[in-house]
Length: 302
Image 1 (cartoon, rainbow, N blue to C red):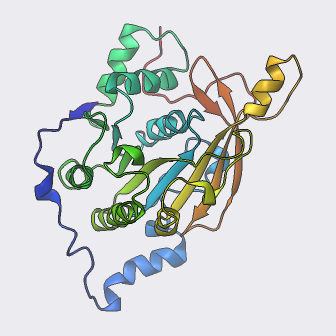
Image 2: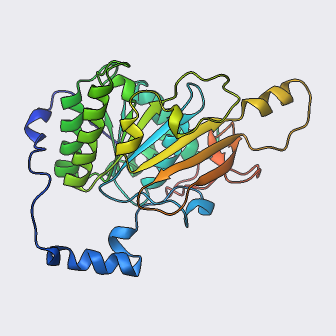
């Protein structure tokens, strides 16, 4: 794991004016063939869970929004996704809502599959992730240009493939500034295409009638342009109804968590995936199995 501090001059990496060029169609000959063959540009990195692999891919040059109600596990879910991506890609996490050490603690627990993680395992994880994981060391509000410049820096200087921005409300835009939100998300889309990087933006939901009801694409807080402009939308929802039943002594075999694929511009699937929460590891499991997923970083916790 490596740190990206706020002392870097990110502004020099901002160049959105030449993101698109006029080209002859033959320029995309190989990419066109790959699309028809269902390989290359039509494929991308995968989520941790086998049951999602035929339905969801994170393709280069796209923007995904992960939306959910406060306290419904957006950061925990995306942390597990980022951890899995480290096996195949380079990742930067810009979590302006959580201290870097807290982000790392959660990821180490998820990687080890247990609550109590030995010092040796912690150190091995840091070594294993040294050239795979970067963390943007900045909390609270961050100006838009710093976010855009940071992403461009990650792509051009570090070869990073996935950048997680947690969250939209920390990017220096007021909740009621819909035009500002539209401009920012549009710029994110330009940066993603320009540098062939996948950007994951965490967003919140509007206050609904109840947090027991699973929200949808029209419940994302802010401008409607957010969901219009992005390529992928995932809605994370915690089953509060199940928790209430268990608290009152009732039996319930429902899942603990859902991830709704509410939009895939370049994918056919839209639907709901169900998951079960494993408290010790803070992992979300694809079934009600008691065994956490194995991330295999070449070292066992002891």
